[in-house]
Image (cartoon, rainbow, N blue to C red; front, side, top):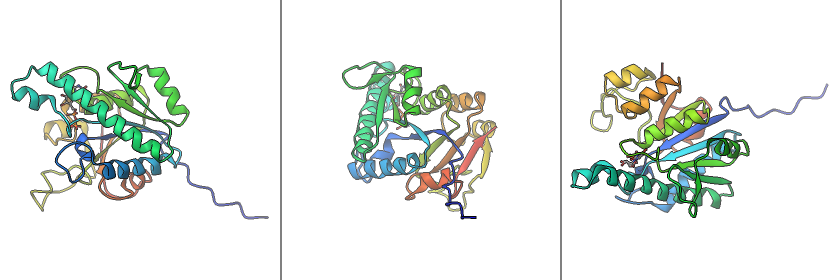
Length: 245
Ligand code: UDP
């Protein structure tokens, strides 16, 4: 009997959400988008997409504008938050450009309609894009002030029936204290939603964690700085922390 050709392992997860902060796009700069860094992250996404995984993304806006900072400087909070949401649209467009230059098909979908720039959010349409293997970048957060893009990522991940949220950060997981300041900080392998809330572990804000807990959506915190990090975490390798119930 002839040997069967080796089959590629099917990915364990079919559909995932990648959440990154706006600051992840900044690279070595102190502000804005650093094109080589945006391209590097786009390649990470491409690598996971090529495994057959359907990928949604939410990108923050902190590299351009944060509502809380604006309001601390005397701006009206809601106006400052809308500015923050618009910043996420700029980042989404930057990421779309980088992904498309790699030959990937993408859609930017905004919670605040801006038809000339991108599509409005229509759930069934977004699902269809994912089924057609387009990478969907959800922009403008939840469309509401007083929220964050962490909550937006959890909300959209729930609506899209993602199996997990992957939160790419500068460190390879959740620690009991800041690992950059304290060399003896310990990384959790797994941690519950309740522990994240009660110990103020700062994985995501409380409303995002509560929503993830309600929808039993695991959050995997990993380092986006490690080359190939996203793909290896999806393949069950590398170090990360899993937040679950
Ligand atoms: N924002 C908002 N509602 C949302 C999502 C975001 O008002 O649903 C605003 C808020 O002002 C926030 C800013 O957009 O400070 C940028 O988002 P975020 O701080 O989550 O970005 P990140 O820290 O992930 O870069």
